[in-house]
Structures are given as structure tokens and as C-alpha cells.
Amino acid sequence: MRAEARQTVQEDEEESAFISMTDMTVGFLFIVMILLAFFASQFRQNTLKNVPMVEENLYTREKELRNKIQQELLRSQRELIKFHDKNFEQELL
Image (cartoon, rainbow, N blue to C red; front, side, top):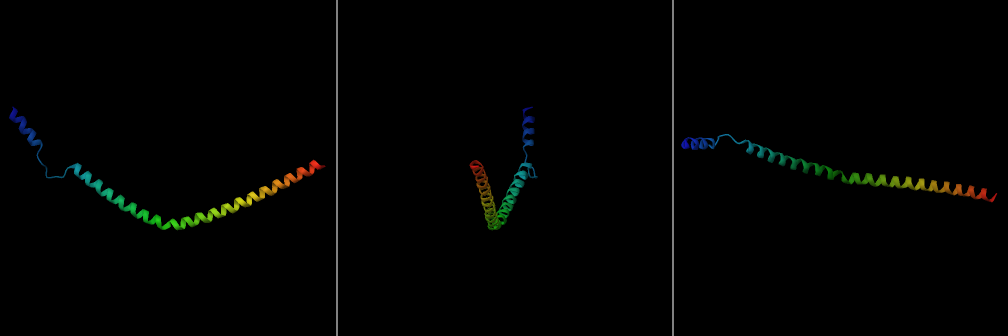
């Protein structure tokens, strides 16, 4: 009986001519990692080309917003001065 048990264990551990599923999965994941690295480098190169244009657009937009804020602030100050002048005139009367 013991001899039969040993023979079945040895038969189960025989090498196969086919590649194992684990080896195929590891190979596939390695290829995917290489492809991801390639596409990430391509994306970075394309993004870096657009940086000066984006910075210029942001700078222009910032100047426009600063001008609008200054104009609105001046308008508010003028209205406040007019309001105080009217109240002061009313107090004098």
C-alpha cells in the first residue's frame, strides 16, 4: 500500500510541457507595466509642451480679473463717498 501512495504522489508532481497559468499571468502583467510606462512618458511629453501656453493664458486671465476687481472697488468707493456726502448734507440741514 505504501508503495502505491508514493507512486501517485510522484505522478502528480511530473513536469508539464505547457506553460503554467502563473507564468502566463506574470508575463502578461510585465507587458502591461511596460505599456503603462510608455504611455505615461508620452502623456508627460505632450503635457509639457502645453505648459507655456497655459501659463500665458492664466497670466492674461489674472490681469483681466485684477483690472475688473480694481474697477469694481473704485466704483464701490465712489458710491460710498456719495452716500456719506448725502448723509452729511442731511445732517447739516
